[in-house]
Length: 163
Image (cartoon, rainbow, N blue to C red; front, side, top):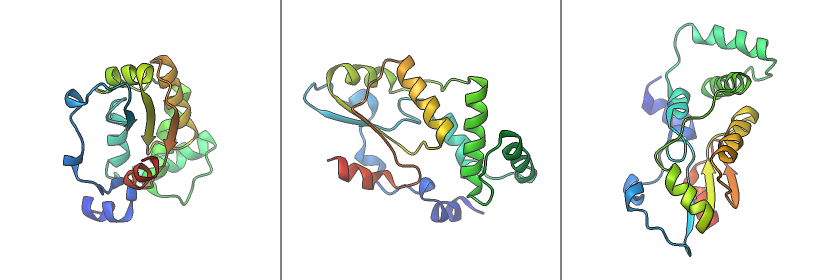
């Protein structure tokens, strides 16, 4: 499956908004009266786990994934391949105590968390991914007003609801 075909079948891979609608982190004003909505992966946290999600399937991976699902006791057979990979990866990372690496927006998010209205909107989903995200927030002293975990729903739709 090509990247374009994958993007058509998986909403998590589709970009619905123009990248030009976003400010570089260095240009985001620090305003105590503002409302800030941060993405998690690639902004507050490193984008490496999102890159793992987006990897193309390898020839042996399907069989290995079935073995891992059974070993971990996950009942996810028949679900989308990338989502199953995500759930297995997150479960293994949680069991091994693998911390989520920080991203370039962490310092700004820490300032916002202490000084302004702060929300997080993320596609990160699944029990283990959620637990790891919460551990990251606690470790880095981040307290959003709300955490929107939209899974594979397009984020621009959720942003419109936050407005």
